[in-house]
Length: 218
Ligand SMILES: NC(=O)c1ccc[n+]([C@@H]2O[C@H](COP(=O)([O-])OP(=O)(O)OC[C@H]3O[C@@H](n4cnc5c(N)ncnc54)[C@H](O)[C@@H]3O)[C@@H](O)[C@H]2O)c1
Image (cartoon, rainbow, N blue to C red; front, side):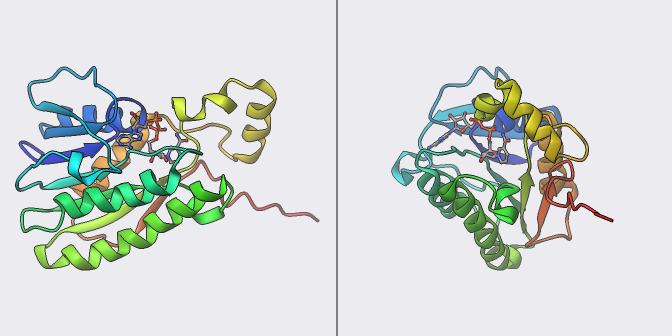
């Protein structure tokens, strides 16, 4: 959407970078926040090096219309980054009349618990917090939803993507026998943030069928 003022966290690589490129391709004005620098070069992209754990480091931006909480880690400070960081950033930008949509990147593990303990718990918290935000921003006509990816081909998963044995086991769990790309998750995020106007307080699971891989033994 042309000129949509969008804040995305974790834009230096992976899903966040792909989301920033998708929103830019659709004409949005994107403000990226990451602890690392960015290689995105686009006149409509502004990058801020900041830490979602530290509200004082977040840039002052007026009248944000779309917010994507994507920054996340696995196994190091999960609750502080994935859950408290999402809350910090949402409190900074979303509770004001210009807001149209908040999309939080959760995880399939919020549904299954099949991940490291604090990671799953942080993402379960993101699902509950998303519903809270939806109730708070409905008065502005805005929606809040989450997208829960299963496995995505990003550097977050290098330890298992680069391990032949583990990769074989993972593909055995996934009915569609593949993981999603960061670009596909970015399409979902854009759809939920911009195309969607009536779904709120919901979660979209994009996991290649892994959660519902039930077996029929006869
Ligand atoms: N890759 C997957 O399989 C997968 C699956 C489910 C959910 N997710 C979620 O998707 C999101 C993005 O994951 P990814 O795979 O693209 O990871 P990634 O590691 O490739 O990218 C994460 C980005 O977040 C940034 N970041 C980390 N801590 C930060 C902080 N404190 N403040 C600001 N920025 C910070 C990193 O610098 C990095 O650029 C995360 O929330 C992750 O939990 C990923």
